[in-house]
Image (tube, rainbow, N blue to C red; front, side, top):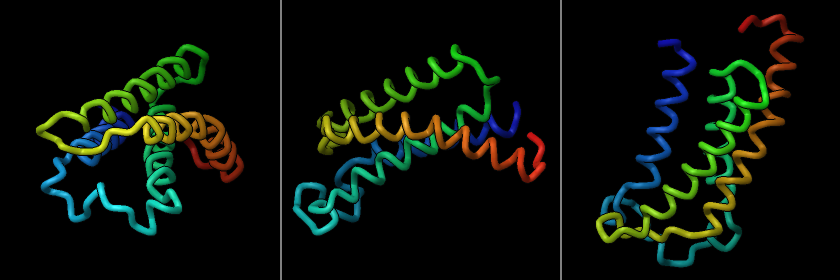
Length: 128
């Protein structure tokens, strides 16, 4: 298995672990309103995690509309599933539509970021 695929799979697993860690094991209480929640730092974290997801998976595939569509669909599905599962009693987290939208925004932002990274790698003559 290529290293890029391994890294992308590991990042996807990290997302699942982060999103599906039960409330009782978290060092912070999601139900309280903190300063970071007031400034929506959580949404930027969600978007960033899914931006990395998109870039890593795009680096594993040959460029093309089909690859882009599959990664878009996979990222969207992962965003929806992670938020839905957070509402299960065993997880006892706050699955939120707004978090899923931040995840989706991160997926979308990953596409232009991927192209920018690829352009910079070519300019610096760093091979794939």
